[in-house]
Length: 213
Image 1: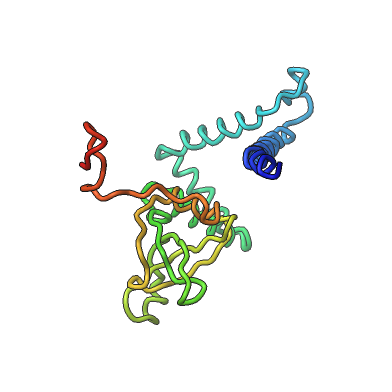
Image 2 (image 1 turned 60 degrees about the vertical axis):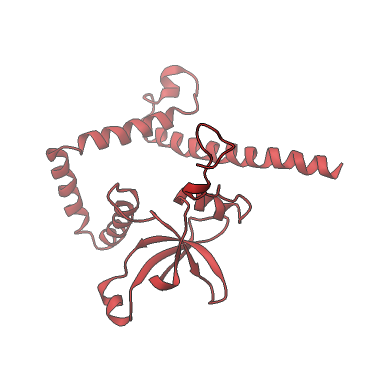
């Protein structure tokens, strides 16, 4: 009986959490419709409340913004808006920091979160999975001997919180796994192991899988 109960939990718990997260996100996005004046909301026009319309609106707004700012005129408008925000005392610090992080993480040309590493953390006798974020600032480099790396150590099972540390490059081990695989490994607390990548000589032959390549 206990085995059947645990097996059922393994099916329903991930599904339930997934549905809860999706429902929360959809509800939050649908909340933007409340910004519309009374009478112009989809519920007032259609007569019924259709979940998910807010998601469609958010996607259309994001796509439209990207389309408009992809040209020179749009970039000038963004620059003008950023100049205004840069003159507001508290807002400029928050916006500037968030923009730097988003530009680094989301940009195709950025180097953040492109490699999974093993680093010693939280002490020299322990290792944990971390992600390369770049190189330390010049001020930090001048205070340290040797080549160092800036890495992000995520917490488990919530990788959105963690620690930023600077470590010696010689004391890190680059892992042969993608960032997505490393994230799954961290979130699952080590339960979901990445698929091992076999050396070229040991990989199955595509013609005859029973023979090595």
